[in-house]
Image 1 (cartoon, one colour):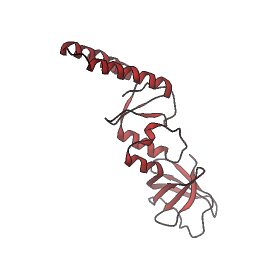
Image 2: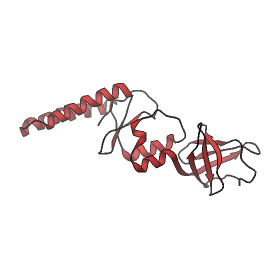
Image 3: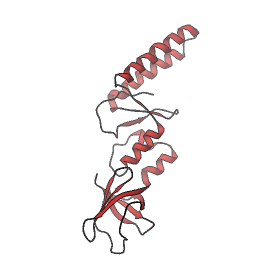
Image 4: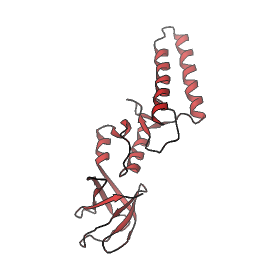
Length: 181
């Protein structure tokens, strides 16, 4: 499936079917154009004469390639979507089909394991750190028993409530924090 690309935030991704292909795009125009491309390809598939069917596929695929070269359509694979989901973890994003994904992806929407790349203590009880995906997180009321956070520490985020997450660093007791950037 293909979607037209409209200037949107990176969170505007849509699942494109069992083949695991995805496309970036804006919701309404993208869905309409997706339906057009798919309907055209499905119509080609129904043509019985091999030469006519091939000519139809050539024309419709040619239109998709031209749209891709013009920057109107972009196809991405499942791994690109997973990487994007990891980068978006902790942000509140619209409820899009692509963010539901398969069973493995559903785990990622509630839980993320990654590595800390940089950290600094803001106050006695506040820490700010960056993950390998480039996300910036903040713990604003850290208990005194929390060991200093440093690069290469393993961190697990689990969705809590009201935009907060339980953050467990190197297996320590979880603390509450949120993504700020």
